[in-house]
Length: 63
Image 1 (cartoon, rainbow, N blue to C red):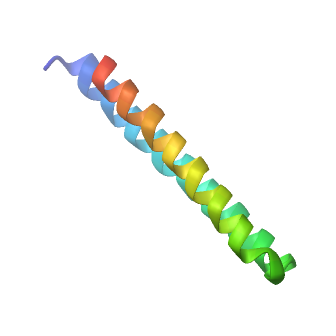
Image 2 (cartoon, rainbow, N blue to C red):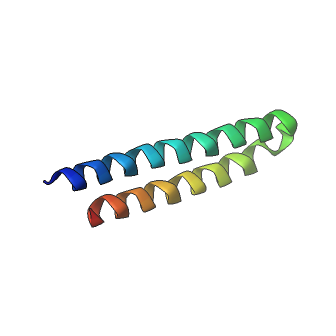
């Protein structure tokens, strides 16, 4: 593996981590504001997190 590929893979991992962190942060704020909508918020949060991870895996395979 060459150095640019290693740097690219590292950036992908950092980006995915930041993205999932932002999703979790937003979900927790939304649950704090509307506790009765917890189930719907969690469902959307999990779907969004899965999509971000999927894009991250695709980017890692492309590197």
